[in-house]
Image (cartoon, rainbow, N blue to C red):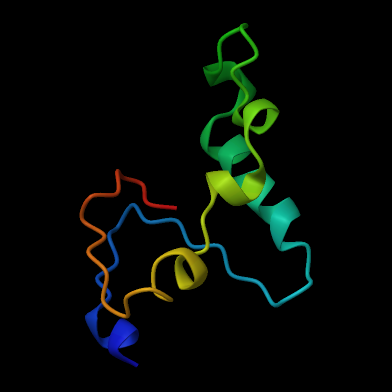
Amino acid sequence: MATRLNFQANDSDVFLTSSTKTSTTWLKAIIPTIMNPIGRMDDDNNDPLLKRHPNELMPSLEVKLFKENPNPDLSYMSSPRP
């Protein structure tokens, strides 16, 4: 409950929501592709999915941040925040 009361969304935040076991990892792979379409990537294979797992690219806030601290400081995250 403290998380809901204290969380401040930014206009540029990107939220991916889905139920458990509904292809969440696949959805996490789509977001970097949408945010960095092929035309914006250079020819040196800089596709982030070639180097990192989708769960690393799109962290789960409820697992990575809010589990350890119900009111974490998110101001350090660059925009748009995943």
